Amino acid sequence: MYAANLFDGKKILVTGGGTGLGRGMAEKFLSLGAEIAICGRRKEVCEQTAQALMAKHGGKVSAYGVDIRDAAAVDAMVEQIFVAGPLTDLVNNAAGNFISPTEALSPRGFDAIANIVMHGTFYVTHAVGKRWISLGWRPGDPMRAVMSIIVTWVENGGPFVVPSAMSKSAILTMTRSLATEWARYGIRLNAVGPGEIPTEGMSKRLSPGEQPGARARDVNPMGRVGTKDELNNLATFLLSSGCDWLTGQAIMMDGGGYLATGGNFYELRKWTPEQWAEARALIEAQNKKDRAQRG
Image 1 (cartoon, one colour):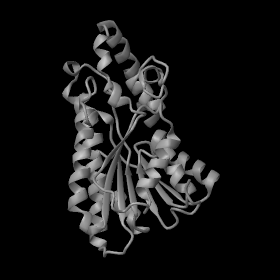
Image 2 (image 1 turned 120 degrees about the vertical axis):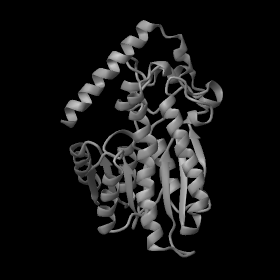
Image 3 (image 1 turned 90 degrees about the vertical axis):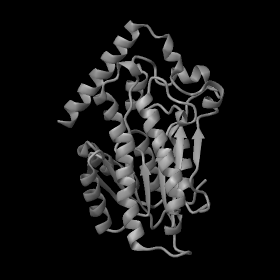
């Protein structure tokens, strides 16, 4: 539905762009002519993704290894990107999450999610936004856009994923707040709450031991999960100049799931202690695997 050169002249940073939904959005933007920067904690994964995307589509993809929980490291990365040419758009996609009874969470477990999702998203948005503002903007100039990935749970709460629900709610509040504060600088901010779109990371921490998407297919009004292409198309519209008056909005894309069922993890109240123990073991095994891959 989009012109092949729609994003010519754009330079877009996608956090968490080495895998999953971030990689999918980065590839879509690249295919439409944008220059792409991707970042993640595993630089080698981002570099492999960058090479694969350029081999497939051409263009330019730059890869950065950064822990977005580190504000100084984020600022240094964004400065490096801007020195080579300013960004035009930002996609806040990097996140973390896992299921747990809230009473079983440790402060470290809570911080592991909040520091990535809430603090990290603010650090990146702040580092990019302040540079845009310093460059100046006049009416008639191209607008800059920030799109942040949230969750449908910001509307109705997230039992068993409280750190994520709290942190994503903070991102939505940031989106709405900065949409009014930064509009005069030519900056738009919007958010998207995707329903279940199976990815390896999401499935192993939120549905351990289950067939990805099986639970959603049983209860979703459309009888299916979402696809990366659907998210990619929505993200493309939000970063395009197709409706520059759209800002401060949250769009929920989940086939009507949260309207019909709440779209969250409330059904896990039925789990036995044994099921929770099994889930914790599977999640910890995945965490150990990830730590080993990071070296």
